[in-house]
Length: 272
Image 1 (tube, helix red, strand yellow):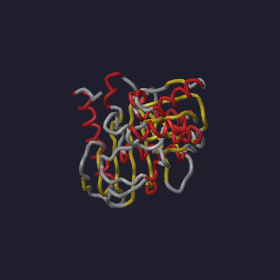
Image 2 (spheres, helix red, strand yellow; image 1 turned 90 degrees about the vertical axis):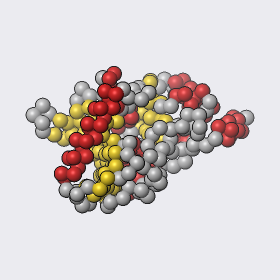
Image 3 (cartoon, helix red, strand yellow; image 1 turned 120 degrees about the vertical axis):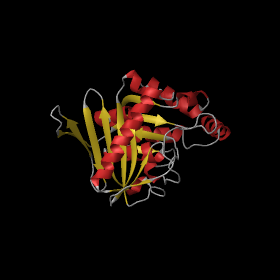
Image 4 (cartoon, helix red, strand yellow; image 1 turned 180 degrees about the vertical axis):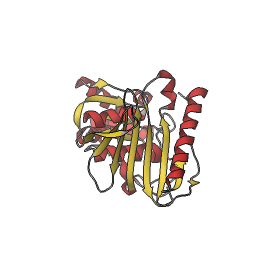
C-alpha cells in the first residue's frame, strides 16, 4: 500500500538530508533518488549515486524496521550502468540497533558497522557466507494465485519446514538473510497482472551486490541480477536473493518475467 502523507513527509525529509550530505562530500557528481525521473548534478567529482533514502516508507507508521539503500558507480551517469559496474553498495538499517553494512568492488565479504550512543561507528561484524536455511521472505504473493511455478515453489519450501519472515520492507527482509547467513527473498513478476514494483537501480542492484559479496546468489530468473543494465531510472525487475541452491530452485520453478500463458504452458509441459 502507498505510504501515508506523514510517512511521505519523512521520506522526503530523509532524501533532502542525504542529498545535502552528498553535495557537501565533494565526491558526488550526480545523484538520483528513488522517485526521481532525472539525475541531479552535484558539485563534486568522482561518483554517481543511486539513493533510496527511506526504503520501507509505507511501514514507518507500523514502527517496523526501515532502511537506506545506496548504490555507488564511478563517473557521472546512471543510465547504462549494470551491477557489474558498482564500486560500492551501502545499506543502513534502523531497528533496535542502527547498523550500516558496506561492500566494495575488489573486496569479498560485507562489513557491518554499529552506531553507538556516543555517535561513533564501530566495526561489528563481517559476513562471508549464505547457506540454504529455513527462512523465506516471499514478495508479491498475489502472483502465486496465478503463477503455478511460484505456487509450487512456496508449497515446496513450506513442506520443507521453512518459516515466513516478511515485513514488506526490502531492507530488513533482505538484511536478515545476510546477517543470519541463510534464507531467501523472492519477488516474481507477472506482466499486466502483478508486475514487480522493485526498481533495478535503487533496490535490486545494490542489494544483489551485497548478497553476492556475502557469499549468496541473485537472479532475475535467467541469471545474476548484477547483469541487469539500467535502461531507465524507474526500470523494474523480478528478483531472487539468497543461497545458491534456493535461488537455483527459484530459477527452475519461476524463471524470468513473461506472459502468463507462456508460464502455464511451460509448467504443464515440465510436470506432465
